[in-house]
Length: 296
Ligand SMILES: Nc1ncnc2c1ncn2[C@@H]1O[C@H](COP(=O)(O)OP(=O)(O)O)[C@@H](O)[C@H]1O
Ligand SMILES: [Mg+2]
Image (cartoon, rainbow, N blue to C red; front, side, top):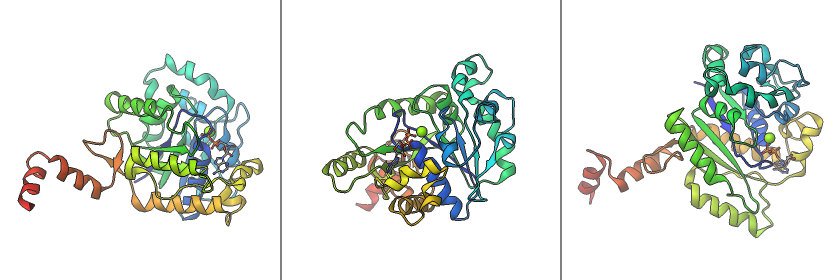
């Protein structure tokens, strides 16, 4: 089974792209077959993965408007044979508008990936890197997956806009994709020397509970330098703190699997253990409530 994960947060500069490409590269180094779909017209993920993405290159734009199949847009990563990228070009900037009048406009990416492509290629992971908005591109990313990973930058106003993102995920869950849920929150650009970072981390853990990953990504110059060389930090400097942190986070994401939501957590995922505790606390019709009474 392929885990397909959308990396979203409508704030820019929080580490969506950095997380998409480095989680992908780390998992590829751990012998997983991984695809990154770049859905941001800026094409930063494509740059970091060394994918050609000048205007006119067959890209996620052609896939969305139905002019190309995903397999024709997919490029192998120069550094790692397990890693692939469907790049984004500036042509994608027009897609938000062009999509409006298309049939199944919210499901274009879903249809392209799910009508044979994913089944044929045997990916272990697909990461979809979103633009910093909640428009049709992001909606297409949200209907194509079950899992959402939200990177949160450990800075002032970290949770600003997250309420709106949760509301949107809830709405998409209700109307367009019942399986959509937050399966991971990753704290990024964590500066252990500051009180602010630990305060933000505490606040985020308070709001999202254990869906927040135990590993955090430190602020590290190597991480920000790597894209300048058309590389992920995993390839640019695998021994650096930033690369190690992404290796650990990737192992955690892989090891713990998908966190499923619970009736009492809205779209926010919890581990099976926590879901069982919640069932105890809230009482599941027919089983939980009786079982709890019996135990006491
Ligand atoms: N852990 C980190 N340490 C240092 N710089 C980082 C780190 N993560 C991201 N950055 C830098 O912060 C900027 C924004 O990150 P990016 O992943 O592009 O965010 P987004 O995709 O959410 O807009 C980029 O210049 C990136 O290189
Ligand atoms: Mg980005």
